[in-house]
Length: 376
Image 1 (cartoon, rainbow, N blue to C red):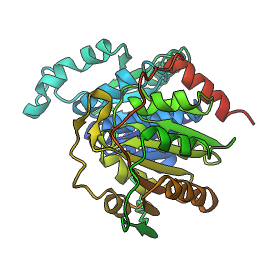
Image 2: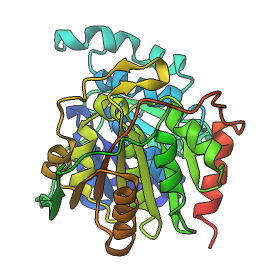
Image 3: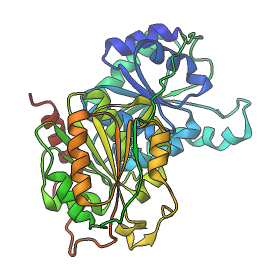
Image 4: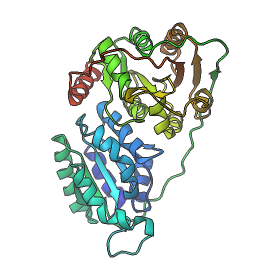
């Protein structure tokens, strides 16, 4: 079918924000999204799901696109982000390795289990028709499913779409303007103290997103607020969630609080963040060289220069802070000047004793945050 006509159907129904990773079976739909809508090219499929989830919280109706081999990359956020937070997404996944069709050997197993995997994750699905009228009726069914809080994926077979030419793309190049590396002794505060300092600077325009584990739990103990989100699971996805939210809500200040173990898991997100460069997002890394939430096992962050990496990925500012005072000063500076900013603070491995878990459920956190964002 004509990808442009089908794309217009999606657009008419409000699906205008797309994120994904290319597949030859989906190239025409992806080309349409790039040509006519807001499209965020993700480094991997799980990142695309997290970006789309942030956009959904920000009020968009997002779409994710991926090859079925990449569906395995998306399992974590589809089961531990969109499911517990009740963030319904529309998805398109190709059917490489379709049984009975010749294909490359790496697609054979995935071709047999794609629909089974969707069912295991409790994602509603249908094979997408290659007739535009029938496909439009399917989209109406999918939209109804999404309105009831359930994700819906279309499984796309080979040659479903006619070719859609990709218009000339203009690559966005963002260079680092301010890079401040370590030049003095470091204070090594606790994570709890760092979170208190960050939280004290929020205002009515601020949204705080805390990574999974003790980071979110400690922020909850400091202050449970309607503009906080405490990630559960989906390790490595917090800044991608922030990117989707920042792009969809440019008038809000998006404060992403990350950990070294989390960031290391999906470091490709730094490149995506730098490329799309939302000026209303600050990405704070609290590095204790440990998976402290799971018993203090060492991460591999000891020798990594995160300041250089963030700068080379296109963050406008990449700042090493040596103390809580410098952390506070850097955050105040960002609130005045904006620009995508990376702030690094080395912290102690110690965490708060007898740490509680949030008593509010993830989907209630999302609902409350959505209301905060949309409250004029």
